[in-house]
Length: 118
Length: 108
Image (cartoon, rainbow over all chains, first blue to last red):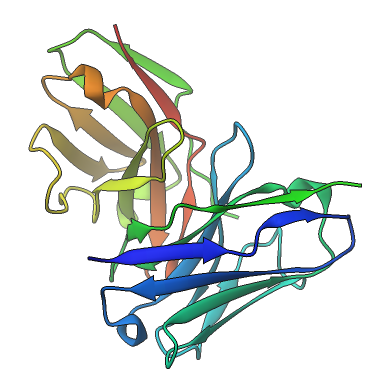
């Protein structure tokens, strides 16, 4: 069965960096785009970033553009989100999610909590 | 940037039909998806491409999208359907989608 497992969350000070990882299994990882979506405590979902199946195309939400980068290693079925210059407003549960081409996110991980606080 | 709007809350009696709307400029020209999220759980895709149901999603869930409004309809609503529902407007050109603010469905 399809599984997505995020890791790397924790407490970090404003201005610092953190790297999230997502381990995928149960599907042909190299055939699908993958997304990061976040949810601040008690708030709604916010799309963060997407990377194409081969890593050649990447898009970011305006709120993280220039601070976050996304990458993937298809040989390891792994997705990463490098978060730099973190802000208090980046505090959220971060989910990785599989793209259900052409539209939709059909599988989600359990999420990893990132808390940005001094 | 593109935005879609949902009502914060909708209430429905058990067995009745619940309708949750999602509004945006020329939304009918884009694909929409709907997600269900129960407390403490990850979101679940319940409708994609406006009206298609993933396998395992009950037939009581249906969707439509026309003009500036997309609608998620739950027929014969059950207590287990109580959850937050999010619409997502999908731009096939950019391969990503913007979420609505979410609607809390209460079954009472």
